[in-house]
Amino acid sequence: MSSALLSLLLKGAAAEALKREAASCKSRDLRGDPLTLLELLLLGFCSPLKGYLGRADCGARGQV
Image (cartoon, rainbow, N blue to C red; front, side, top):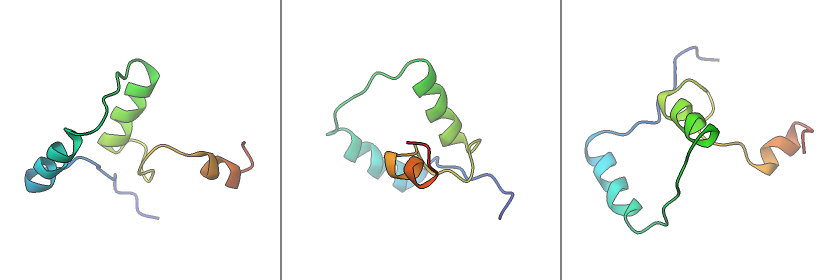
């Protein structure tokens, strides 16, 4: 397993393309714990996680 942090931040053309795509998405107002977790994910502090865990992820670990 790699010990390098995984950063999910985009730069340059990839970031601009995602901004254009996101303009058509519904917005969400994140506050408190969800915002904190999103910031930790984006900055790589939850490496190697690449996103939120879903029901299937938790079920695979017997935590449903």
